[in-house]
Length: 190
Ligand code: ADP
Image 1: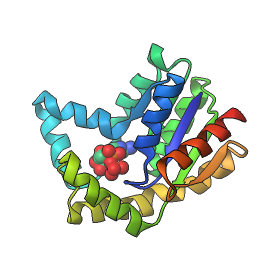
Image 2: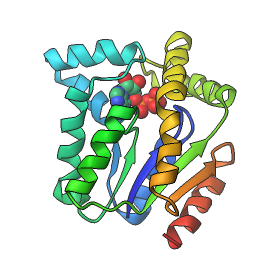
Image 3: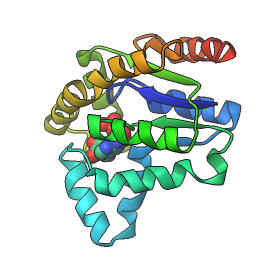
Image 4: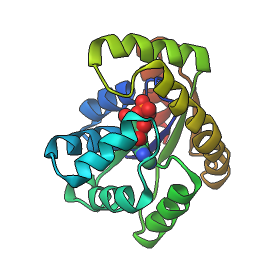
């Protein structure tokens, strides 16, 4: 099962991706998690990433694209993956579509998590009390949401067209268990 998840920060993509990953035993590739794990390396790249991520800006494609493709070509992704947080802008999207085509990787489902700005902002503020992420403060949350609505959300229309019949919008304002069952029902028919 090969899936891409779209949705604003705080829409619950990560939560659902990890529930699904445990259930159907395919890797959850969260670019945010992968990049955060690199912050522990204490090298030059970690310093650069830390500056970009704590401001809520996007990490350059030149850094992220090779990381994503290396993961997608890994053995553990052969039978499937859940891609969460990528693509996030038009150039990543063009790159990914070309990469999938060249490597004959066929997506099964694209899920778009729909949630309104106020709800996701409140959720991120709540999460910040638990997770202590340097980018979960009001100013940076504003930047991340602006970036999402300006650069990422418009991609959903493109994927809706390109992956007709495989694109599925989910109401991400529902309870976690309801979203989970909606996704599982959709997967049964994928
Ligand atoms: P969010 O909750 O804002 O969606 P993520 O955990 O997905 O957070 O990502 C955290 C940060 O990692 C982003 O603000 C950005 O700096 C960086 N990042 C994650 N995915 C991408 C991407 N596809 N392109 C560029 N930067 C990314």
